[in-house]
Length: 101
Image 1 (cartoon, rainbow, N blue to C red):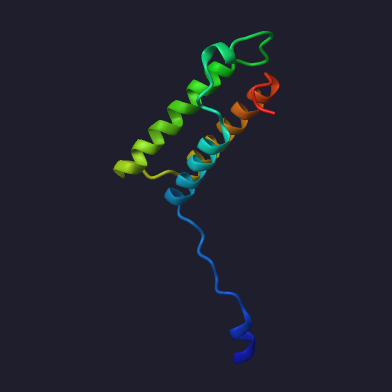
Image 2: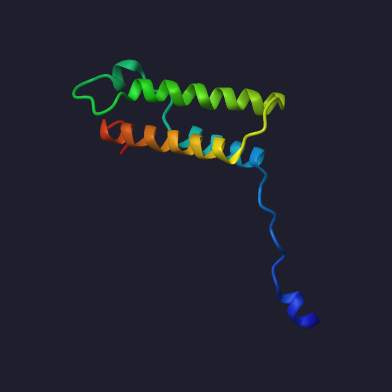
């Protein structure tokens, strides 16, 4: 029995919602090109408003970053799901408008 226990990997703890939100915010910042100029976003045929989606996502990311840094709010699973959904929708709109390849 002791050899069985010694070969098993130690259990990894699941992150709490605060750590998960920090990781999600980092992933969003590294994936979504927040530095795009308005002129780049608003050219040609528009398939969903990239500018509005970017503004909404940026506001959410910024607000959560401030709340996490100041420890004024703890995200729930619903908050994590909403943030992920908003980021995915924004990414898809940027792809449709040929701003991300």
